[in-house]
Image (cartoon, rainbow, N blue to C red):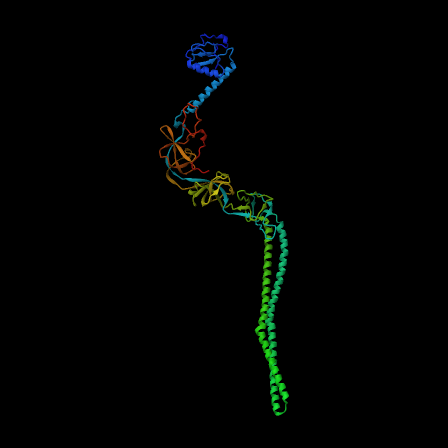
Length: 563
């Protein structure tokens, strides 16, 4: 605030009784103002009755402008720089107080004096036929995909194990034909095992051949005994018995002749006795021969046959053992040969090569990687049969069932839209991430009715599942509703005011959402409802405004919408 020129800039131009110093109507206001100026170090004297100033001229009270203004004037004891600084701070305090009061009371320049209908877009609540959908994220996958795994096995007794090092790799995304090499594993250990196994196989083959010869000889021995030795022995025994019988018959005839001759006196008694002894000896010899034949038939022949048959059985068992051993060694040789062949990984059919990323911390497939038995390395999807793996939030999974139609949109190709059908909805949830968030999703499959050559497995998509038509329901635009800490509400317009009202929602579409409770047809609601906030708490003594704290201000959320 400038000093009026008629007052002057020096103390010498004014006197205590100067008529230009008007002190009419000062009273308490002068005392209050003087106290303020004194605190700022600008007032040096303000004494005496309210009608005059007895000290050197320090104040000028101007009544000509229609309002009271108190101006400090410089004197010999007065510092102009400090006075102007004090005036500046007083003016700043007054201006900030003015704007604070205006801001808290929504008055000029902050207040909006338009009517509610002019400030907000209003629409009427109506009943419509709603075709609700559930919008969920998805990922393109092939219905039939061949996973190529490490087929090396841990062979017992060897140090090679079922692991190896990936030494050659085809770039991901390459188009391959059946039989093309996808990668190579280090097979040096298995090749050495194959050479050692070849030696073992030859040894087993020799042992099997020796056992086979032993078995054949044992079988021939049985045949030789039954068809040769036994027959020959029996014939010899039969001849011996026949000869003994013949000798016995002759001896009996000669003994009888000797007895007749003795009766006629032609032979002596000693000769008769001698012939009788010879007959007895031959009879004993015949009986012994008959006994030998009987022993051979009853004991010797079956015992020898069983012995030979036992040798045949032992030879057969040895042969079977050696044959089995040879077969096992051949199988092992074939298995090792297969491990050598598996070190060269080939495509089982035509397709595009993708690296497998399994587990929550997938391993980067690259050259030099040590792979284990059964580890997935590549997969070749069938691009002619595709599906979308959809993730249903636990809040909507109960509304989705098998057989519902769906439309699928793809982020890489916004103009592409394919139809499909929900084929499965898992009943066991899976966690969304590993950060401890208690968010559960249910995985489901949507089979595409047709495919496109542009699509590749792993592409992100959006799935709109159609839940069926709902007739004659109350529905409002999404932007008319606000979700705040679990509450869903809107602003209803009536009597030139907006009333905040809680609602309960149901199914929705991209444009509309069903209101199950809280609104009636014909009511009007704001499409651009005010944000829920208040300004800072006013200073003590000002009127307080009943609004929610500014710190609670949050962006508008659309109710029951899936990302």
